[in-house]
Image: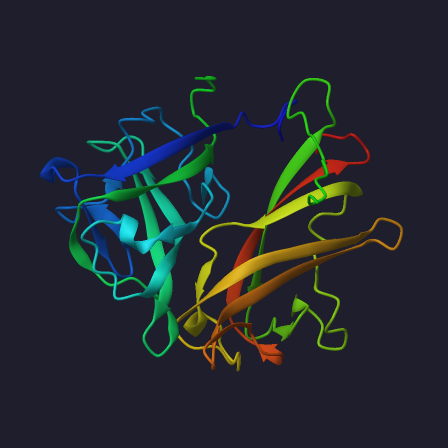
Length: 150
Length: 153
């Protein structure tokens, strides 16, 4: 519910951008999605630090989606050997992994890239260990545990 | 010459605008809970009425208007996850797409239409083929609507 006595919901838009410096390079693992260059998950805990209701099922806790346009120019992901054909792919929000009280707490986001592969087939991008440019934005809607309206 | 531009709706999410509710609904096919698919219409829960979509009135019985819907991401779906479906698309992936919700508050139905697209022979971007018995697979939709009752259920 958007008003009244329903759970308080917050929406946040988060931008993930890769760069040339090794500290901000990305990677891609087929079957998982975009990762940090060391193959660790992309963690947005630093920009959304508050504990949120942890997801246990679809819609319980959070809902995420790509900020459109979801069609991405493959060339915009620098150094990403996607093995996809043509000029464009589709980015898709997969899920967010949340742990509020482990050490350290985290909010891992997983976004995947699809397009036209040889065959032709509709396929996911190939794994690549280093991506030095490009990015995506996602919108997350969630219930904060605190009840705060931050 | 210029295209026609129309304001379809402007919604105030809090304050004195219309009360809007959002509901998340998952549809899951199983061995004893088959779903079928009708090309150009989408998934249907009754092979005897293959153009009638999936009736979600049982889980969303409130009367409503002005519905906006979308697929809960991920909208990419692995075709291997849809058991028993001769879909006619090239493996491995496809896109689920919310098509519409047909509502009759008087006859008490809410027919949900979700379609699946992918790469077909040609190659072309095509829709999945009709099949009457799909025994596994699922999708989820988010619906935002105005409750006629004004209730905050």
